[in-house]
Amino acid sequence: MPQASETKVLVVPSQEIGGRLRRVTTAGAIYERLHANIVSLRMPPGMSLQEKRIAEDFGVSRTPVREALLRLSESGLVDIYPQSGTVVSRVPVSAIPEAVVVRKALEGTTVETAALTATAADIDRLDAIIARQRSHAATGNASGFHEEDEAFHEAIAQISGYPGIWAILKTVKVQIDRARRLTLPVLGRMDNVVHEHIIIRDALAAHDAAAARAAMIHHLSAVIPDVDELRSRYPDYFC
Amino acid sequence: MPQASETKVLVVPSQEIGGRLRRVTTAGAIYERLHANIVSLRMPPGMSLQEKRIAEDFGVSRTPVREALLRLSESGLVDIYPQSGTVVSRVPVSAIPEAVVVRKALEGTTVETAALTATAADIDRLDAIIARQRSHAATGNASGFHEEDEAFHEAIAQISGYPGIWAILKTVKVQIDRARRLTLPVLGRMDNVVHEHIIIRDALAAHDAAAARAAMIHHLSAVIPDVDELRSRYPDYFC
DNA sequence: CTGTGATAACTGGTATACTAGTATGCCAAG
DNA sequence: CTTGGCATACTAGTATACCAGTTATCACAG
Image 1 (cartoon, rainbow over the protein chains, first blue to last red):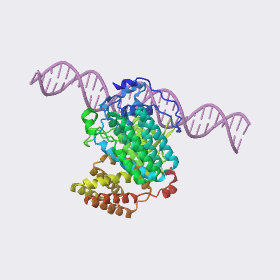
Image 2: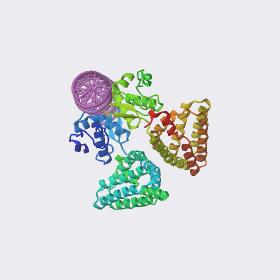
Image 3: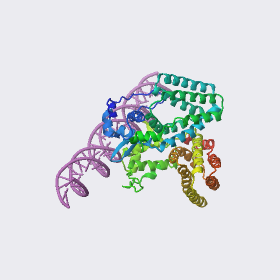
């Protein structure tokens, strides 16, 4: 029962320094936690959730828990059946290819634009991310690797001048990430990813929009999880 | 005070027949209403909202109102300042060009794919939509026209086999629509839209993916509101 | 043994009460 | 007249209580 790992009482920092003057809210903190648990599959698809139970685990009332669950349901990570129950959503198999298509369309555009506008400082930023990612690949730090992977793609969106596109991509990526988490991390794949990132970086540095787009499309095509195989191995996790 | 138009008590149908077994919830109904009011600018950007006030107007408690406002804040239509207040969000000017870019990228892809897969029945469906839209243009029915416009673009997403992409587009379109609502409806523009739709339809019928994409990109480029002009005319509505 | 219906034990939805930050305006001190 | 500080009247965030469906159970009739 994965939820048992949440028995510790939630601690909400009274103030968040992060530039924003926005207070960290209990509901938001719970959202973050549940979100992380679902994406990491510690709360697997199909797991039933109860507002009351979660509230007790976190040591808060049902209200903030409820708000967190509502947000998660908007993200498609939980399904709420009124008066009946709430479950961690199964990964909709149809969403996987769709998500890949969206990524190709959107990231193809951002990387193309970024190729035209990238400055030397931008390239330096990408190099720093790639360096960190390479070291994580060397030490087999999968979560750190994934973090820098996201940073790389987000950075390109920012360089392109369309940072809001990354927000869209994050919500789309989530389903892909859940499916990918089921495939055992292939160590060799990490090195490939780094290599593909470097190709993209080089195209950006050379201001070659077409090459950048092609490299990005290729990169995104290489990471499609084999849905059929996953579906047969974890039938309960998909729908 | 636009909110005065909401003094009538909210009526929640006890059951929704719409195929889904999902009960219509008070919070959902309030969300729909507020969403419509914001997009239609009956609640203009910058207007301050209060949970208590809205709850009284609808004749319900604060809870469902609060849930509706939380969903709206996720959609970027309201800004919630904890312990301070809630306002209808200003249209972020930077979001307009970004939204157009997203539409081009995503709809360029869907229309391209749809060109390859469209059946005769699909084309008939588009023709029906176009016919209705033309009649709305003739009678000057702006809201009906807009409805069919959305139906046209949604239909293409469905034909392409990526219906989920339309869900993304809806959330993106909302800011464009708010800005566009400020420009007086140009009657001539409606006829242009119908004409552009027909060009897209013809390309789909001919299974010409490249022409379809080009027609869609052109169509989407033609409807960009003049942000600078709007900004100077309605300074309070943008940020 | 099996199908069926009353019922009890859940679920999430809503209403209300309370807490704790925030903005505002008044008043006094300079 | 300006300005600093404090009292007050807000706001949204959270806790609790209650309501209305849904589902599972189990006794009982066939």
